[in-house]
Image 1 (cartoon, one colour):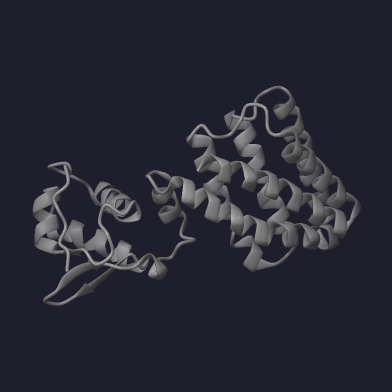
Image 2: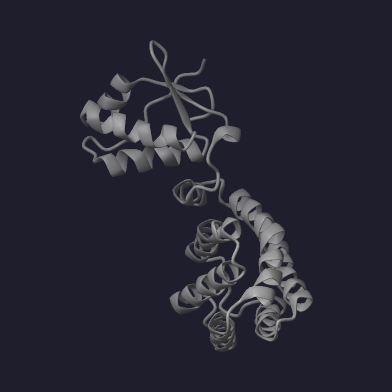
Length: 240
């Protein structure tokens, strides 16, 4: 079994910094599946107490990223066992060399989910929800037309727009995908991959999707949401 090489970890670290460093190394493949770590080795590497190491290990184990066994140590598990929709794990993967693959995977997930959510929103949304979705779409168009697609204001409105659509359908399983979608939108923004002038097809379909939801047109809502996610997917695949 492969064993881990030492990293340039800080000589003194908190639970949070140990967790983030270990999580990032595992998520980025620096510590590959099958790598064996020991608590004593981690304690020495990070210059922290055994309690701090145990807490970081406990969190990573809860995410399925490692497995602890007596007399063996801590083993990095295959990615197939990870809680891949965990927002913190998504953030780690978006921070490293796996970012392009993570963005594509999450955008493919969006394509599978958001058109259905939009259909349900058109059928079930309250008047207040419809009004808010329409308002957010108008704000996105205003900011996009002004060349502010890469601004924090656009990011906030974009996340809110997608959140409202997922919520308005009244399906808690779909609502549970809000955070992973917010993470991939934020990850692209933080990486400087969101254009100041959004692609016309994507922005147009945001507005048309909102219009369809407002008027209760389920077919139109699904079609236009599928249109903008397909546009974004083509864009992120080209970025790989």
